[in-house]
Image 1: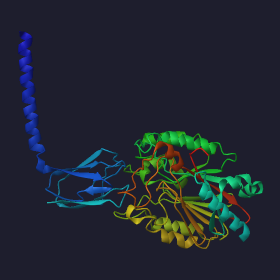
Image 2: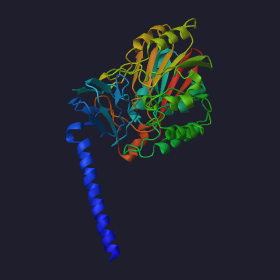
Image 3: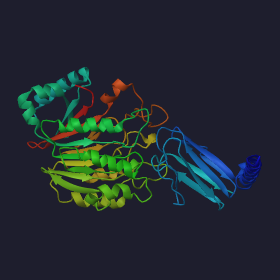
Image 4: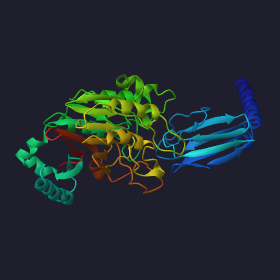
Length: 114
Length: 315
């Protein structure tokens, strides 16, 4: 019986924790402040992306070849990202940010932060 | 080499191409690269003596750390490569690695590669970095292990058996959207390094990315390579060796012979075939024929270079 009460408390605690986490997630990561760029066939897709300040961009490598994401100004540098590995960066300041793959410099892209 | 012999060589070369597979021997005489039938050259005793001692073997694009379908065992194929070189009757004086030692610039990859290179019977190893070796933010993993010869600049020169070797780096100053770059400092250093040398000195230049434009859309070239060629043109025998494209492509321009080596890890598609230079998956029985090394001998009278490409496929 005692065990049953503890279990009820435990379930209630978990429910509250999940609700809090979900609420927290909503506050921090609504769809409007995350964005995705896929790296596939030696291209960034999209190769130009307009976002709001505070948005976190995640690049995902879907090629069998490693790629990287390097800011032209040195603001960020991912290092080599192998197949299915990702790199994320949050853009807080409005501006135009050019980036390239430092393994295949023919690959270039732009983030416009409003 | 007399014209008659050259013609004979060319006939043999055509025969060799007809046989295929076994490996081709290239004779560079007076700036003209002439392929020979490797099997015939081996049978021809006086001819073999003329080939002289192998000066060096070029290995390239070992990509330790790669584990995809195109070759899940790059350590295994490098081991086979090392065994093949160690099995040569005449051991080369030097081993030259033209970059992409590692796949992702990770310490464990470099450590494994170094341990494997220690198995070469030839102990003198010269390297240049590829772009896969320079992806850590400070490029310290490559330079900590291989930077001594160049004082961590990546480029250096040395002499061996009367041949002047120039090691160059074209993967450290990429411009977005551009090709490989040597940069003004390195170009000035090369011009100074060559100044005062006799034009009869055989020159071997090696770097990772091709030092001529093979395919611009895939970045297979070096944007400022023309400025490198200017001080090289007066020399009677210049051999330019690269890796990067995982297949053999050659060009002769005056006295300058350009040659890219196979990888020991995996092949890449021919220029423009497919969306980009991805690892090329081929049937397992075809893979050894697409991996291998280049060996180069020197002939002293007259000064010239002999190149031969050998694959991992059983002869």
